[in-house]
Length: 204
Image (tube, rainbow, N blue to C red; front, side, top):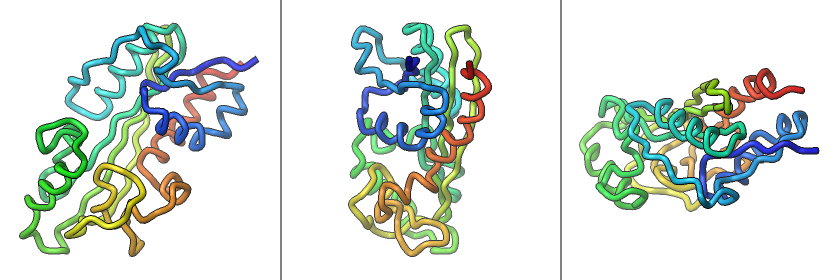
């Protein structure tokens, strides 16, 4: 019989994406990945950490404690070299309102409009965390490098995907297919790195 493991999100798209990324290890360990929609009474966590790993750990620990089940969480954002790693943990609310993707990327492009192409390096960063009900926490990070375009391109993906030209490619992250993106994305890399921790902690 499958055991449940909870992803600390109410976003069904993210649950589906992670089922694909971790498909092999979930099948191997007979784990059923579910989202927070299964636990409507559990309150959302305030993400007030100062790093991606802090925020992911806050979410995973809280969900593991509230549900009594192993929990996964991640936090990610865009780090622009010339801005010293900003927007970073403020990526989702860079323009002032949480989750206004268009306003965020338009503000960012305006801020770097006079930066020459050779200095427009940037990358997505993701910290993925496994928290167990006993308080044990495991962390892995993934990175997805590229350079900033001068205008959005592509309709796949979300957030800053349309303005990150993928390193070694002629397309932005929003011009990749979902399968192509999962194979090289910061989120895919972080959770695949965490797969060995799942095997160590949840085998048997």
